[in-house]
Image (cartoon, rainbow, N blue to C red; front, top):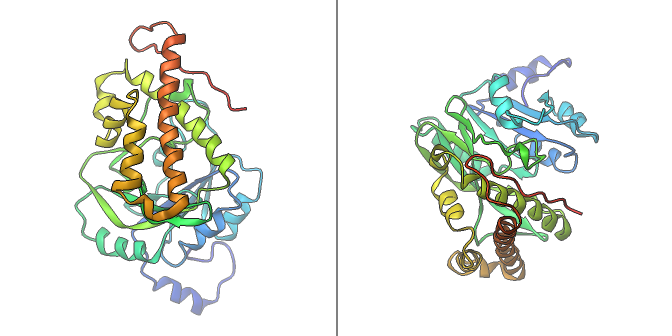
Length: 312
């Protein structure tokens, strides 16, 4: 991604590399067993970034070899079951080269329009972070309508960290998957979309969202007795979601907004299928909350028992 990283270089080639103007952004890619996705992710960065960091959690496939072949920095991470998880650990323990960091998953890709918008926006921005939107690839095709996948993944290194709460009692995830960064400053939006290639079969999609719905139900139960400061850290969409998760109408509202108001209907059968699956996802969260409250005795403040749910 710039430089020769321990290999003999052609001096003329090196001079051309040194004259490249890179984006003032460090890229961080947390991985574990991502040999299928990582090559395309790294290729989408070539020629634009000179500080790319892959943070690996004990991959047993060729993930690390792929990262080394692309001459990027590789960090090894082993979670001890407590704070910090992978992204916060990297923010706390690694010194990035640039003032901005982009947290990119291995199944995500930058596009030329996104890179051009980065160049226009970041040089004189007063914001400390930016929301990014993604075009989802689902069942073999890109979905250009509906409710886009969206996350706060580009921000100034010194602006904050990802949300912190005691989720280690109900999850084995070693990375902040659902958490958002809590930043000190204003947040902007990158209008161009990245690509998200997270689909790897309908069975895998359903299994992942079953696990995610359990996580969301546990967080809801914890938030009911958590300190007010944790509610204050939620963004507006999170607050609406957690306020209404137990309402019967929330899954239907999501479906109507995604499929009709946001025109998911124009994505055809695939758009219909994804909207129905997301509607089911919200209904599963609701049912798991109801079931847990019926089965578990009332807990004192700050001592909420988590749901115990194992995928089979």
